[in-house]
Image 1: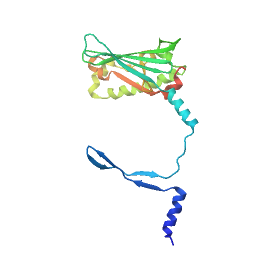
Image 2: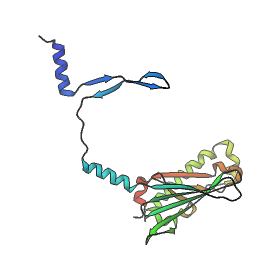
Image 3: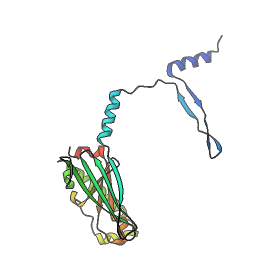
Image 4: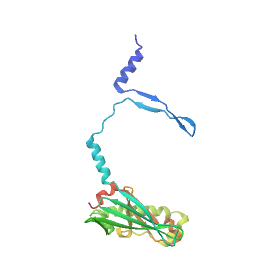
Length: 216
């Protein structure tokens, strides 16, 4: 007669699924290392419908950017001019980085829209729909928060006494560009060179977050 404990275990396994564990050995730099225990579950795998996969792929495609970067000759300097181009749907941002004598880059951004098979420059606010003011309010709140982190640091007091107050930024006061499935807002207080390291604030949003504010 079988052990009652074995029968109970068998019933539980049939009802809820059993787990079995195994250990693997890997080799790195000639040393054999025992890996952490990996758990394998016999529970059934739920298949993902093709419709759900299609919806997921569509959502990914709608918030995807295509970016490329190239260097351009910069006469009189060892550091090249850097041009970063990112395309999102019918829009494109071009960021041009120009180095100073210390190799520090300042960036200028231009937005473009595809019209009649050609990209034409547009104003920053033209990227957004009539809900744009709500988004701009969020951008300014995050810029303020970032600057206050530095303003409260005694090492940077002199820099912020020069700025006096942190301004409210409009769309045309900002540098705006696409990057890695994000939309990034860059702000500058115009602080002197000695404060260059804290002069800029970059606020990024996932494209899925700002999609409700963008022109279609």
